Length: 126
Image 1: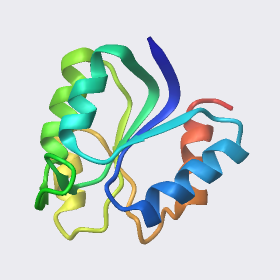
Image 2 (image 1 turned 90 degrees about the vertical axis):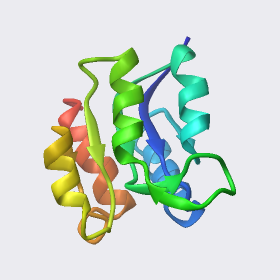
Image 3 (image 1 turned 90 degrees about the horizontal axis):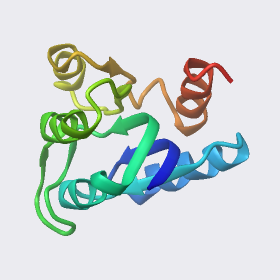
C-alpha cells in the first residue's frame, strides 16, 4: 500500500508540478494522477490523508477534457468513505459542484500551489 499525505488528480503539468514542489518543500508526500482511469487503477493500493481533484480532466490520458469531478469523488469514496477531498478548480461550475458533492472547494484563482499546500498542511494539523 502506498500512503501519501496528498493525492491529486490534475491533468495540467503547469499546475501539478508546482503543487508537488510545494508539497515536497513542506515535507508532505505527494502523488498525482492525470486521468480518471489512472486514479481508479491506483485506488486499491493508494491511500491519502487528503485528496485533491480538479474539475475537468480526461477519463484516459490524452482523451477529451470533461467534468469528471463527481466520478473521481465517487471512486475515492468507494474505497475510502471518510476521505477528506477538495475540488481545486477554476471552472465556473466548480463551487456548486463541490457543494453538491459534499467536499471542500479551493478555487485555483485563490489557492495557488503554495496556498493549496499550506491550507492542506494546516487542515492535517501540521
